[in-house]
Length: 44
Image (cartoon, rainbow, N blue to C red; front, top):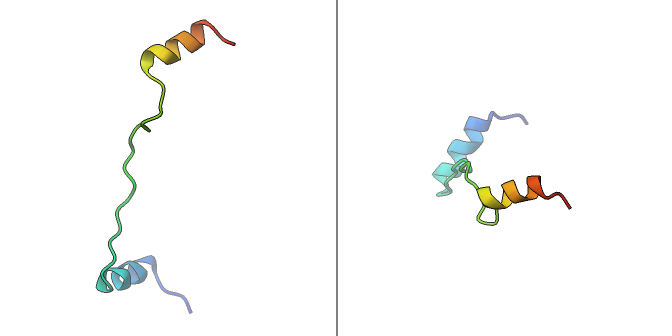
């Protein structure tokens, strides 16, 4: 059986599930601008 992704999304919505695309954000553990600059200037 083949169904379109929109059929699946509609069925999930009808069952009470929600779907959101992941947000493009910087991770909390990402190095700061100063840390990145220091790493470039002083490579290990």
